[in-house]
Length: 344
Image (tube, rainbow, N blue to C red):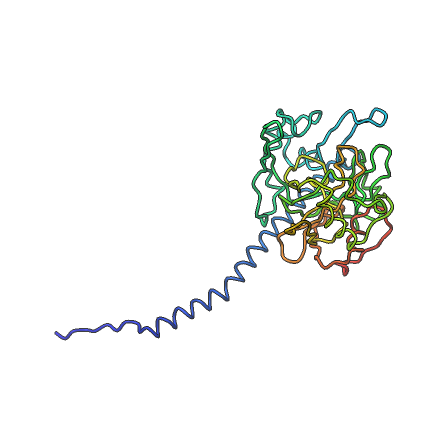
């Protein structure tokens, strides 16, 4: 009986096959990555819609929007601090009733009795595109270690001026310290007013450094243009401590931890120091009495912009190329501006 010889692949044929497979991978990989990013962005949008529903339910129940923080004064002295921010006050409306019931807002967020609450990661607060969703651990000067869960969503507290201390001028954002605005008070219109925008976790932030703000820009009525803001941030390294970790404590209402301002447009890089580090800036923490001027920028890992929640409950993707005047107008509650969708 004759012998059957089976012919194998030649080297050239094998190389051709490998080349075809490589081309197919090169063609398909971007599509797969785009599909995954689309799914992540959709989940991020759903998170913001949940936050929007929670805000509306809070306002319906309490008659106002939640405050950024609550400070109690005796004369000009702060005698009580409820550092708990907007996010923590929305917990009952995010199906987090047991978590909310176990926290003690009379005490600081750093109090050991609140450690379980503040270290609890909340899925609704994390964008799937975030690359650092893990809780943040810090050790204070006394050697006490605390763990805090992070958040990717900041609340709009205005453009530059955030808080002026006791009897200070109200800020221009939807949320503020000792301020409880209502939807009726957002006279620019609910569809024209941002409530929330994406932020990155572990964002370096200078804070507690009032000397970083030049006197001519330390005013509730004067807002520097973006070029000036970038210049102030860049020079802040000489007036401030080393950058703290921003948006790494969802429970704390200080701007660099639970909020954002519209001083700079989305994803703007504000390098500072040597070597340059992209940083945010708060002149002085609100719970230290202010005055607080702040450039805390909305940022995301979505290409080209950020997801934002508006007061009417809608979620929109704002391109990072938006003009700064339009961006600031969307962040004000009663500026009288009208911003068309063509602007973003």
